[in-house]
Length: 123
Image 1 (tube, helix red, strand yellow):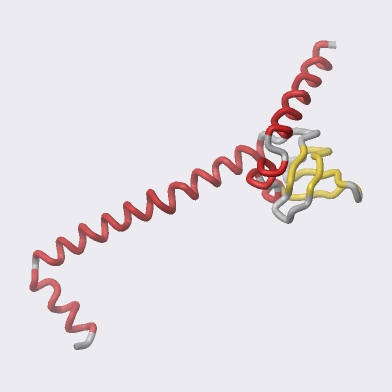
Image 2 (cartoon, one colour):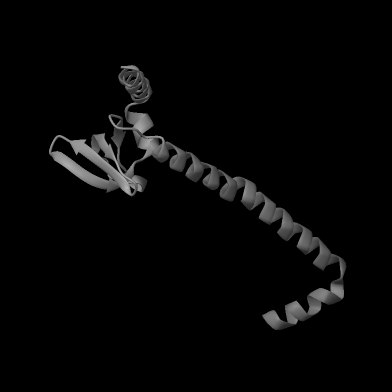
């Protein structure tokens, strides 16, 4: 039996076509909640992380490079490493790698940097 004859017979069966539409809809909803939505959430978290980075924060890039943010620019970061200062795109900073490597240290460093900024603003 060829494919064309299968498609021509499907509308004649009536009940099967509506059941097939329901199954396709259920599959789409399943894909959305299992694949698309979590990926969108992860991308949003990554973007928020990259936007909130400040000077002095220790980060790990997607390439595995470790460094400290020396300067924040509109289109990227200047990262200070042991070999010098290098410019990278914001997308190169990995939230996942940074939290895995520095964890609480990164959060504590951000809090102390914020305290220093507040003290200098008061003076």
